[in-house]
Figure 1 (cartoon, helix red, strand yellow):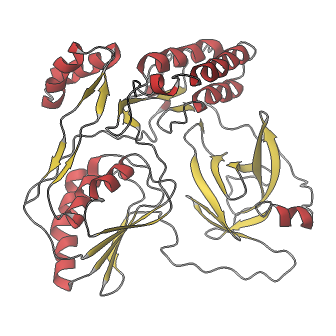
Figure 2 (cartoon, rainbow, N blue to C red; figure 1 turned 90 degrees about the vertical axis):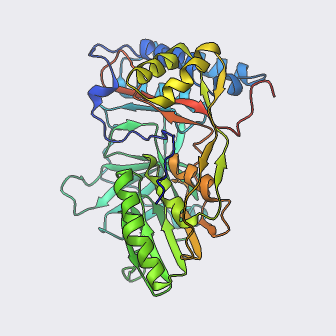
Figure 3 (cartoon, rainbow, N blue to C red; figure 1 turned 135 degrees about the horizontal axis):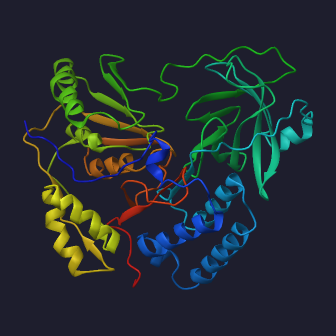
Length: 434
């Protein structure tokens, strides 16, 4: 059996200890940190030249100058975070990630919430009382303003969780009454915000499904299927014709995952002549290269994808030199090309996958997606879309692949701040000369 090897590093860094994100320095200066981020973006971000080209340059200059001016007027870490976030927001790149691991969003306690008028609720159906179906956590969503930005703010009015406090903010929603990004108040301040949406009287977000509570009527609990949202890795037959795999993140050991597919799932599909395989990728933000093993289910003919472009900066060359010394043939082959083309984009070799076996079953592979599918999850969809077996249902994905491949966090002089920046450009992104 041929092994699938994919030379991509579409990494989402989750749960890394804050010390790894910075040099040791407790005395933080907001303007200094912002200048470090700006310097890195302008010299190392592969999307900088294209996104500040032409008339965009004057807009970028205004955003940068406004952020620099504001940074000189604050000594507050949280305010500094929002200033740096406003600067990075110009690029609209979900792979530009800034996090303050020492801070959470600042709570504004509100025990006595104003009654939402019925006329307002009818005009804006997101405002009102919502209850999460999984644990009965109940919040009231009102309109608010944060740093001159309109948000929808959810205050806790009922909870069984002892770590949560009634009257505290549970999350802020940035967007409109139908689609939005979510800032949770239970974790660190980060620009890496997940997405949610309202579907009539349901609010859908990665941590569960919420139902709007109508206080004028007797409320009956809503019972949902166990597959209502993708929360943990699982796989099983749900009928004689349908097999289900739920993958909320690609964090599995690639070799073990491939072994599970080859020695357990594929034999079961073949023995039972299972026609349909559902691969639930909702809320899967990516991770490691274990996603490549799923190509076994869809494979019909050799797969060839053009190579992505590595941005040849002095910093990138140093990283390749280090990896080349450690014995990586991939980095050894690319290093001379990078060194010969400083400041340019150097294309990698094409990705080629040729497997020895094609499988009759499953006959159809259905991928379910939503707005939080990102990074390597999106790369998987590009990898398999040419197969006639594949059908994709759900919502559009996050759109994070124009610029990708995150390495270790970039160094900042302020302890507790974390900053990640992509290093490559995908093969479909136009050049600055276009």
